[in-house]
Every structure is written in C-alpha cells, then in structure tokens.
Length: 262
Image (tube, rainbow, N blue to C red):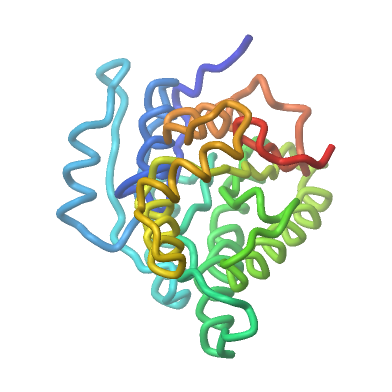
C-alpha cells in the first residue's frame, strides 16, 4: 500500500489540539511537510516542535489565522501557497456551542456557517490552483456523524455540518477529473475538549455527574468507549495518501459502530 507523502505539503486547520493536532502528527509520520493553522501562536509553536520528522529534508511550520475571519484567512493562506503550494488540505474547526435548535439565534447560525462552510470554501479556493497544477490533491473535511444521524442538543452544529457535507460532495464531482479528491471523516465521540463540553452541558441539564453522562454515552457505542484522536487521524491520513486515489465524495464514519444507519 502506497502511503508515503514525502514532498507533499499539508495544511492542517484547527491543529492546536484534539483531532487536528493528531492529524498533523499522522501526516508528518507519512513524510509530509506540515503547516499547522490555528489562532494561538504559542500553542502552534509547541505543536510544530513536537511533530515527527522522517528525514532531514522534512519541514514543518505554523500559520496563525482565525477561521471566523475569512478575509484575513484568505490573505494569509494566499501568502503561504505563494511560497509553498498546498497538496493536502485538512479542514477542521471546533463545533458551535451545544443547545436546542429552537433556541438558536440567527447570529449563531451565521457564525457557525462562517467558521465551517465559508472558511472551508475560502481555503479550497486558495489551495486548489496549486493542486490543479500538480495534478494531485487531497481535501479532507473533519465533520461529524451528525451528517448521517442528527444528534440531540447540538442543533446549530447538525445544520452546519450537513451543509459542509453537501458542499464537499458537490466539490468532489467538480474536482475528480483534475486528480483532486474530496472526502469527509465523520468522528463519533472522541476524547477532545469538544466532547468534554458536550458532557458538561448534558450533566448540568440533567443534574447528573459528568462521569455518569460520559458512561451513558460510551454505553451507546458498540466498542464501549470514546475514540482516541489518533484513531480518527489515521483515517484522515489514509484518505490523504496515494492509496486512496480512487476514493472521492465519501463520508467515512469513525465512530466505534455507534451509528445505526447503513
């Protein structure tokens, strides 16, 4: 199986922690030059310093940007690709605050669409010309199993993630003739700050302890546990590799078997 990414440049968004950071590590292990993107420079510097290097030619870097500010995001990524075209784009961003969809305000929807759909679209527009010139590219969007089975208590997230999945499917069809694939990874419950937030909110609403809520959520998963971020990142790395050259327009659940749909 061809997994080597030596010489490829990967841009990983939301890479300061959780699944994004795990993706940066996995791609680096496959030989890619990785640029990590998030808002906090000091955290990104620590991430870059911790990324593995498979040989002396491998280089990692950071880019400070806010996915919620698409104008600034475009400018900074344009400067990046002018110096080093991006071959692999991992779109990843923290989810909107949990809450009932009925209680959600228009600004909450707009903020979520900006941070996810519009940021992803902006990044794609900037990096795709370089992928087209290379005749090779990978776009992997980290979304959620909620695009298949909407989850209770995260109404804005369900709505936004579904839009991203539809956008990705459409984009995959347009880019397939160019040798560029577009796929989604759908994490289930994963040990990240996001799941901690969801557990905390559910515990507060139910009056139960966070331990009880987490145990109940894990019991709904056939594997009986939450995922480690590295397990989700492994799926992302595979879809970014040469081995996945004929896979595009798919949404791959990494959920321990929790989803009941086919």
